[in-house]
Length: 109
Image 1 (cartoon, rainbow, N blue to C red):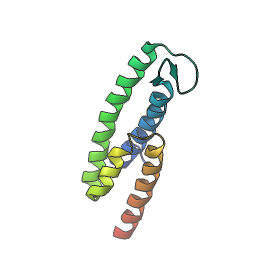
Image 2: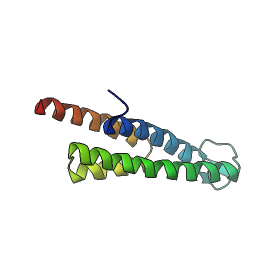
Image 3: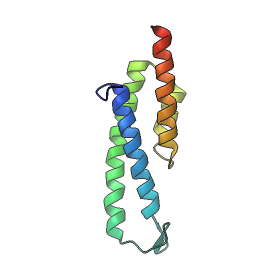
Image 4: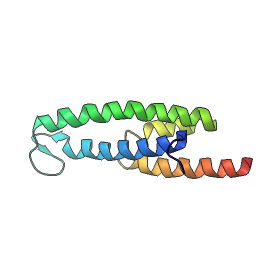
């Protein structure tokens, strides 16, 4: 698979956003301690949060590219967009969409 295609760009961004979302949840403050159990500075949270937000916007644009190119159903696009909100779901959605698009491409040929 070439990463210069819309699906390739989506796969890259889904993995990047998935990893960043895990970092956001690991370093999110619960009281004064993070989920990982040690104290983190507020600087970590103020850096990782906006980076994830900016990457999520790019991820949404790649979802729109895949939607336009492969003419996916609206519920599939909604699932792809919401996959960037829950840790680990972006990885599952990326694999499902990749398989779904590959099967459709083979059926067309």
